Image (cartoon, rainbow, N blue to C red; front, side, top):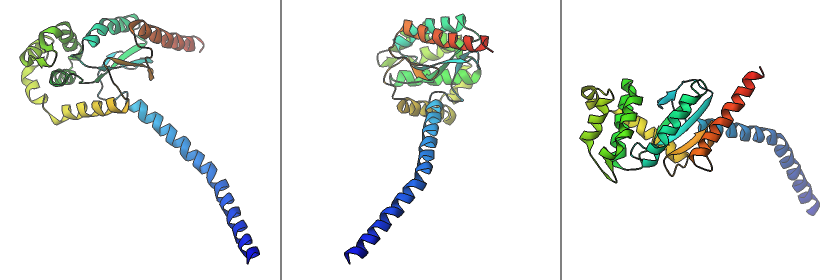
Amino acid sequence: MFKKASFILAGTLMLTAAIVAVSKPALLDMQAQAAKESGVQAEDSLVRSHSPILGREDAPVTIVEFFDPACEACRAFYPLTKSILETYPEKVRLIVRYTPFHGDVSDKAIRVLEVARRQGVFEPVLERLLARQDQWASHGSFDESAILDIASQGGLDLAAAEEQLTSAEVQAVIDQDMADVRANQIRQTPTFFVNGEPLDPFGMQELIDAVESEVAEISGEEDGQ
């Protein structure tokens, strides 16, 4: 009885080993594919087809900024990001991701910016809202009429915007950006990524250095071709 049981056990172990041997390459392939898909998903969650782009659309160096128009730090960083784009007009682009961390005031301003993007006046509206941020955003309270008035000075068509601001399409963009905020564990604005890498440590000089490093690498590759 013992010999028979031992024989059965040995056979079972051999069969299990054979299955593992056959399955291991498949398992590794599955793990590799999962890792690849995870990387693709991570990249997708940084840049969406609807995301506003400042600078050359196909520039090789991408800055992604998780941005709240009511955020004072975002306003402070804007002259720097604009200067970087002006310094490297062929090399660098800025992708803006909506991050409404300041409640209703952020939501309203983001809706205005998204409608401005759809109307082709995103950048001038953005610049005017940031330049006069203190007139419409104030720690939880806000002046909705001031946001619209300032945006109209940047070229926003208020008559057309009236329906667009509450449209399902605009809501879908905000919902997607907030899902990506959660997926990337964004905790503050602004948060920057340079060619997919988070800016860490965070700071103005660190952003300059990260961009310069990527530009130098791209330029070196082009010179070597």
